Length: 214
Image 1 (tube, one colour):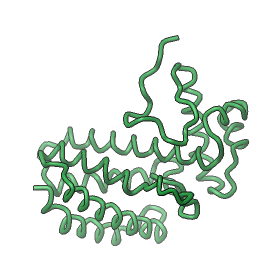
Image 2 (tube, one colour):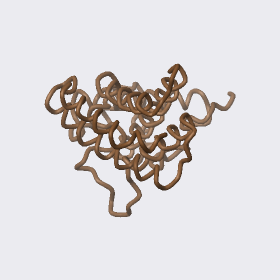
Image 3 (tube, one colour):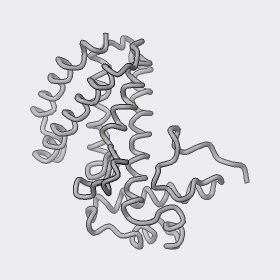
Image 4 (cartoon, helix red, strand yellow):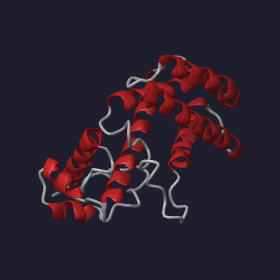
């Protein structure tokens, strides 16, 4: 059977034990991640189990452990896929925007994040990293917002003709950390995201980040 393209353009998630090289294996991994996402919405992280994921995906439990050592690794892989899909959505939006200036770019980044919060299974709980209670083991290897900022910095620089230098990376990281906190609060207040808080977040990002993108 022919090899399949790399599922993750920036490399497989570190938690993935084995990278699928055949179409059937890649499809099985996708079903496992889809099942994980759906169960997160239904049961939350604490009640999530690899056995339930296997049952939902219709695969033997051994198939889950072939890819993942534990539940946390499974969720980390889902978060990695979420980031890839977020970047794809932003790129597609930028490409179809007739006049892409700094404010339109910021709107695109924020709007796609909010749209995924509202519609993508599991994303409300696990967007780009495990739940807050499941922090890194102390090695410092995990920094979800750092990974998001790095990806966004590259996208913004490429589409706006801006150099992706250390200054821009720092500005984008501050924007990501701030928006993450405020959007989480907006969705705690309202399942669809409190519109007033989202509007304030947008205004803040325009004022802080837009001057760095011109």
